[in-house]
Length: 102
Image 1 (cartoon, rainbow, N blue to C red):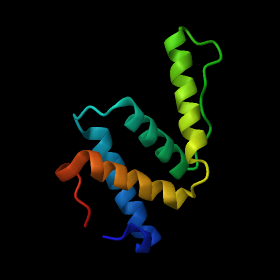
Image 2: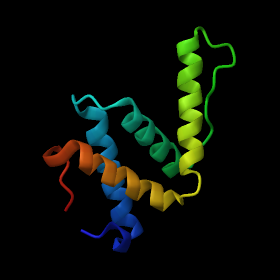
Image 3: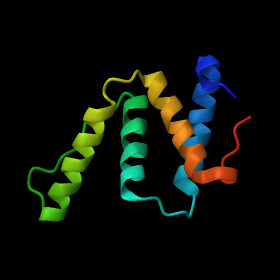
Image 4: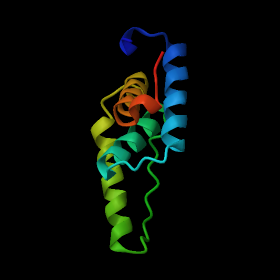
């Protein structure tokens, strides 16, 4: 299936299905993959408002905030549609048979 040729309605439906599958899977993803899921989702939903805790409890939280901000910065050049397509492709790659596109 060529996602670039799909209608907006089809992309939205596949994106919602991909998000649901990623959210419900028991698979453990590498941290960099989780960051891309996070960034693509936030950008696709036009929710680029990164919630950064200014009073981080520990250095680990500050590091997570920095990685999230970096991931958001990297995908900023994409449109919301492109972010949805990239999210769908990432889900297909990492979920395999668990996420079948039509």
